[in-house]
Image 1 (cartoon, rainbow, N blue to C red):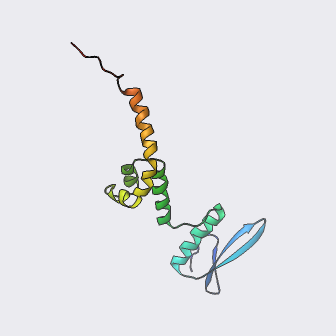
Image 2 (image 1 turned 120 degrees about the vertical axis):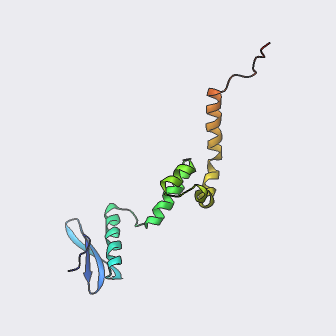
Image 3 (image 1 turned 90 degrees about the horizontal axis):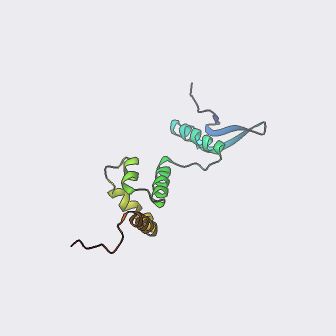
Length: 127
């Protein structure tokens, strides 16, 4: 017997989703053949539909994570480590254009930290 994810069923050789909406069972045909791979994707699609978000492949989510993290100024070495890369070079090559937008932010961070920690100028000369 074929096992289907919750809310996924076969109808005339194709897959369709079902869910309860305002007390009524609703069915939506996906128009794809009933295969093990399509069953898995259909289960993920149903989950994202119920959550009210657009279905995304895992690759797209990784890309979004990297872009958003770098856009917020997260250290590229940390992002590379989180994504399982051996070095940050790939992050610099692929996502470098998102990091340029943070240059003014980085200057503000430096100015704030240097103004708090740097000694007052000019220095007194010891004689």
